[in-house]
Length: 104
Figure (cartoon, rainbow, N blue to C red):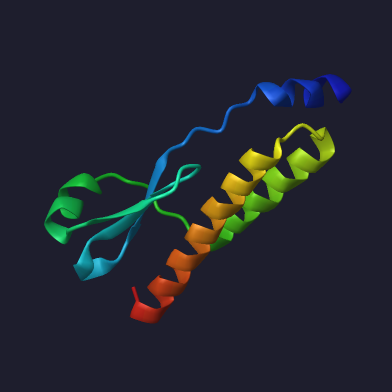
């Protein structure tokens, strides 16, 4: 078990783009670790989103809990990375509220 946890410090979380579909308005995109958002118009989004995978906000909550538990158990996640991950999950939570408000 200790060997498995010791190897966790070699896992790099990629700074990848995530987009949320907002129906007739297109999409809002944000990154996992870096700041900034961008809006994608519907016509462009209709072309880009073909074949994308969607999931619920509950899935993101599960990911967050798992990552936080791993960081706690391994005691090897630096503060800056944890903060960036928390910011990412906050963005996801904010998008979920927008989705519910617009009924999409």
